[in-house]
Image (cartoon, rainbow, N blue to C red; front, side):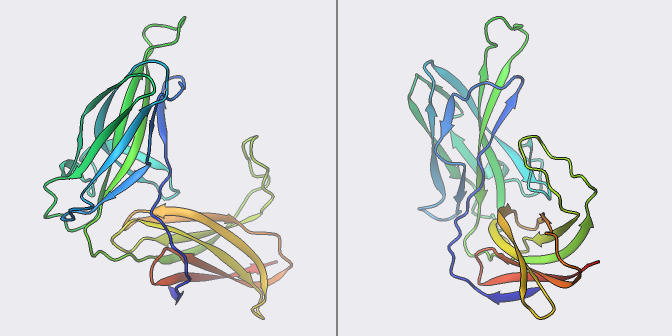
Length: 276
């Protein structure tokens, strides 16, 4: 692992919002004012927070509120489980009130989220709060069908004083068969090689990182730069970042990955490349 001096960049802890559908997609009726929140146990100012739920529709909406577990696979895709399934689940240490909401059209409801019985929590935990609405089937469809819309807010419980850290654990080069299949909505890729950067969150807090890969010639001149878009990682978790390598003249190169996760240093890794 290579470390470089810290660049001046403030990184906010942020994650993507998501809505989960069962059955035929239905228009969302409830909206929330945040996609994630962080609570700090034993902090009077940060051990509770409010989620504001808004009914954006023209009819009354009822919903249930409950907790669940979640994590991500090594490509960053979200996975969901019953509450208490995962080792780092917050479980009963995160409470939410009320557990049911009934909103008239275009009205709002506040949900109080708090860290409870969390004085002994020493490491970061995470769970998710779902606001779930069940919709009747549209006119003309079978009454045996039901539609469920779940809006999730990710919740982290992060004790004060924990350190953030990360490292580039590995860099690999993969051959890509031609042609690369792609959805019709995406432009086709013509890359024949792909660089995999393996980043690991080796600290104790969630991270939001970004960076780039510099492809350099033996004389250290820059041949190409590949941007690494912002990506989140949980403590102790690896993230595989796949980047298409550009067409390069034959020769030897060094791929240098530089990742800024908001800590005191930028972490880096390198890999030799040989283009026949």
